[in-house]
Image (cartoon, rainbow, N blue to C red; front, side, top):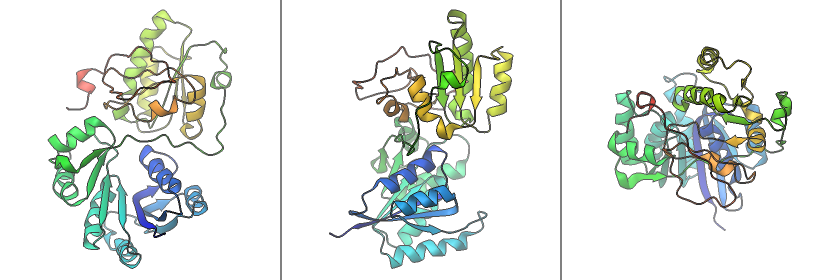
Length: 325
């Protein structure tokens, strides 16, 4: 059998962040009998990720870029694309999408896939222009992870609509992860109502809205608690807002997002803290647990979830916090 030669391209191969985990998980999940797999990290790769790729039989290429001026290091990627006669180049995130499109086309790779893991689609006119006029024109397909992102690619960036494909991100389980009793770890009774979110703590997640909504929940359920697992630039802001809302003792922060996903799915009702239209991985993570789903009102769930029990949706975020349509 002739195996299809596929190379994945991303700047950092790390074990956190949705885009990074998705790229690494996809590379490791493809059947080695059908594909000859390569994984190129342009800036860094964590040892644990390197070990996982090695065990999966994925060949690695590390370019070792330290700054945006290290463009000469892409010569190593071009050499592999030509020598190995790569059939599919699958780039992830903005920088790799741009470089992957340029180098992939220059090396005459038959299929170049650009995979955008979402951004605000406001400001950054150079990025919007490159997406619309370079990546969107010369990549074979441009993948969006939500229906709203797909619309913005066309309306904001000018990507040809026939190039855009919407593929929601998958939930990538961690091997050997154990189900943990989060209530017990927090010193809570087994019957305590517990709400939780697992994410990178950045503005797009709109977690301040979750804190404000939780303060309203406490008016009717004063025994409820909220757990936020993850880290990011908004961590301090969220702690300050929790204190302003007098939520001390009711909101629990943990930077251990890497080991909290299965714990959250096992212990509480997953919610989608995102200001995009697709509910993304939380739809899948709730299926094996039978937990209640709490999608935002703006979420669109086109498929039925027979093993999950739907819950009431909560109001969408205030207009000034919503991404542009």
